[in-house]
Every structure is written in C-alpha cells, then in structure tokens.
Image 1 (cartoon, rainbow, N blue to C red):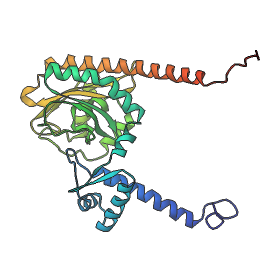
Image 2: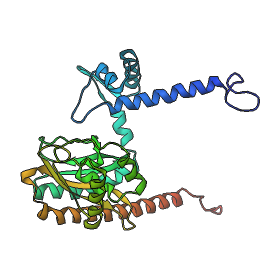
Image 3: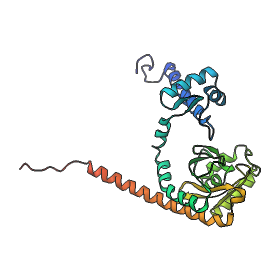
Image 4: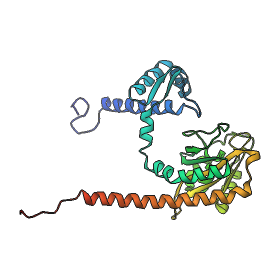
Amino acid sequence: MTESTRNRSGSTTSTERESTSARTGMLERAMTLLSAFRPNEVTVSPTTLAKRAGLSKATGHRIVAEMVNLGMLERTVGGVRIGLRMFEIGQLVPRQRSLRRCAMPVMQELRDNTKLSVHLAVLDHGDTLYVDIVSKRQDLPSAVGGRIPAYATGVGKAMLAFSPSDVVSEVMSKRLKRYGPNTITDTEALRAELAEIRAEGVSYDREESSRGVACVAAPIRGGDGMLHGGISLTGHVAEIDYRRLTPIVQTAARIVGRRIEQDVVAQQEIAEAMLQATGPKPHLPNP
C-alpha cells in the first residue's frame, strides 16, 4: 500500500475508505441484480434487472457487462441469464453439497412412490431457499434457487420451528405478507403454529404459499438436534392426504438426517487419511 493511501500512523485514509466503499457497493449491487431473477425465469433484460434492483439503467447495464465478463451472467438473445460460473461456485458450498447428495436417493424414492413433487430446502435469512426439487411436473410455482419467506411455506415453517429464537424473532419483526389465501399474517398465530410443529415434528401448507398448492413437510435434523434443512411433498390441494403423508415425510427426514451425519464422519475420515498420506516421509537408509 502506498503512502498516499495510508498515513504514517498506519491508519486508513479517506482515499482508501472511499475505494473500499466503492468495491463494497459494487458487490452489493451485483448481488442485488442476481437476486432480481425470479423463479422459472431463464432470460431477463439488463434494463428489467436494473429496474427491479432499484438502479439506474446506465448503472445496471454497466454492472451487468462486468458480471458477463466474470462469467456470473451470460448473454442470450433476450437479455442475460445466470452464468455457469455461479453454478460452479454454488457446488463448492459444503452444506448444500452434502445435503443434496444425502437427500437425492430418498427424494427420488418419494417421488416414485407418491407421484408428488419433492422439495429440498434450507433456511436462509428467514427465507425458504429451494436447493433441489425432484418432480416430473411443471404445474407448480416453485423452482430450484427460488426463495419465499419461510413463514409462508410448509417446509419453511418446519425449519423455523427448530431454529434459534433470534432467527424466529427476526422473522416476526417484519410484516407478514400474504402469498396465498391462507398465509399466516398474524405473529401470535404464527408462534402458536410453530409451537405445534415443534410438538408434532411435521408442518403443513394449506394454500399458504400459493392458491391451490398444499404440502406436508418435516425438518431434517442431526442426532444433536442441529437443523440441516427441510423436505416436503408438494402438490395440488386435492392430491395431498395429510394423514397418510405425514409419517412418510417424517421418516424420509430422519433418514436424510442420519445420512448427513454419516457423510460428515466419512468426509472427516477421508480428510484425516489424506493428511496422514501427505505427512513427512520416513527416512530410509541407503542400500
């Protein structure tokens, strides 16, 4: 660092602070643009992304161009889409990778046996974030990478019920917006619902996330109670038999939870074996 950006005492000058602020602002705006993509949208124009992100057209187009150069976005005939580089980075997230790997066989079996859509989700800043969906149908609104406030979904409520109190309080501190005809918009009613979910170990969505959509969900937890995510069986209201599906989803969640624990132990053992293998070589005497 040059003397022009740091004074003799070692403290940061206004020039460096402004540069850091600019970089932070750029990252924040890039994330806002990425978040402006909506479920099931493949291509969006830079102008539309800028408008959704609350940026000027010129600023939006400039940042989009930089994101294209970095591989975060790709240009298409109608605008831009999420780039493969973002997919590659996403695959590096240990939590998501382990969760998906352990859940996939269970999800496929659930789909084959029930003919319903199977959703795998994690809780992210009070939102339900769908990390995988196994389904042969295209008539449901959810999509991989899509998000919706956790209180408005069955799988989200299942995760909220077993989350730390500060996470729940943060959700309660905001206005509970209506997404479906039966979305819970009263905080006390939501508290009561979460208490019941904790007691029963299962959560239901009765047209809360979207009109005509219902689900049965359960939290995926480890033996120590740690929350890993949630899994649900989703379909149209007429397809969901809550009583029949409840034990099926609960059993699936327990199986995935056990597999995650076993997967973590296996990964630790592999890491230790690799560490030992790359350790100092024993000294061999000259022949």
